[in-house]
Every structure is written in structure tokens, then in C-alpha cells.
Length: 152
Image (cartoon, rainbow, N blue to C red; front, side):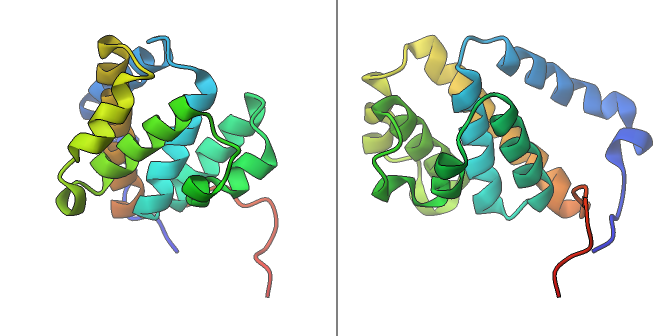
């Protein structure tokens, strides 16, 4: 795989609003672990290897366990995630797969028991932003760092 384009070099001014959204999300009060789980799950769905690599590393650095990262794609079948995390992951999937889901009322209602309205807005910005980053990663074929040659 070879990268197509480096948007940061080609259009740095256009990238500034994306970094402003990231700064808002980082300081909005949502837990770092939750932020990284949401970013990783959306990136898994979108097939963005660059972002999966980045956000699983960030999650580990923030104290996330290997087991929870391994099981993230099957979170519905695992008892390792809190009710708050489950609500956020359901919302993440609903918005990431928007054409298929239509953002069901059930998923939105599930948020209200675990998040304030402000947190729901911030969570939605988080999901929207990682989906935008995934479009850059997949669209421009960003390649994640590789520490060693791929296995044969």
C-alpha cells in the first residue's frame, strides 16, 4: 500500500478546523478511554488501518487493556464494557453506519441514561470527527508505521 496524498502538507489551512475539533474533543470532559474506544471502533468499521493503529496505541498509553481492545469489535457479546461505554459504542456504530441505521431512537434513548445533553453533543462531535479522519486515512491511503516486516 502506498499513500496517495499528504493533506497536511498540501492544504495545511484546510486541516486547521479538524485539529480544532480534536482539541475540543480532548478537553470536553469525556473520558480518554471512552474517546479512544469510540475512535477505534469507528475506525474498525471504516477499515482505516492507520487510525486503528493510532488509536489502539493511544488507548494502551492511556491504560486500556489488551483484552478490551481485542474484543472491541464484539463488544455486544462481552461483559468487559460498562453501560456508559455500551451506549457510546452503539451510538458510534449507528452514526458510522448512518445510511443503514438511520440513527435509531433506541440508540439515542440509550445515551440519555448515561450522558448529559452536552456530553451527547460532544460524543456526536467525536463520532463525526473520527469518521472524517477515517475518510482522509482510507481515501488518501495513509500507511501506519511498521516496526518490522510483515509476516509471510
